[in-house]
Length: 129
Image 1 (tube, rainbow, N blue to C red):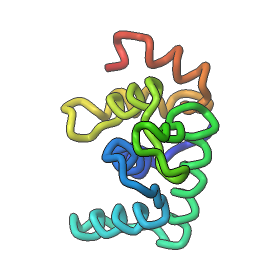
Image 2 (image 1 turned 90 degrees about the vertical axis):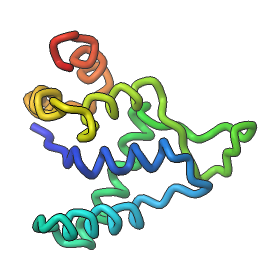
Image 3 (image 1 turned 90 degrees about the horizontal axis):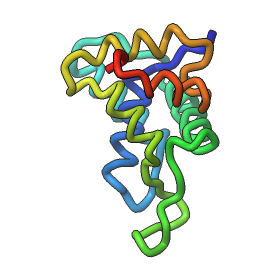
Image 4 (image 1 turned 180 degrees about the vertical axis):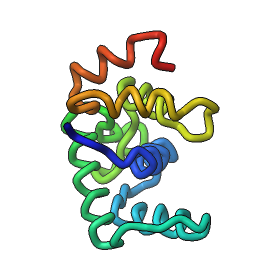
């Protein structure tokens, strides 16, 4: 069973949503770690967290959660936009929305929650949200 750091994925998707001119997952992992430390939470090994953020970027891109920003929308070749699937994922795991734990638990119960077919099926069920 594949497990994901939903907080880190949420942070990465929010950065995509912000639309920076250059997407830098390793830097975002540092920001994430600093936020967690400021909240008094124990953080993982920072180098490991940076590596995980880079792997998540690849995974989110390959599986259709993010895609390169089109040039006519300010695309530089190193920035992204959320796809419909990515927007659905963010809406399910967004910690600013009350009740975010239930969708995360449902996703964690899947063999691989970010598998495209698995996610689309689970996300389409009204009771997850």
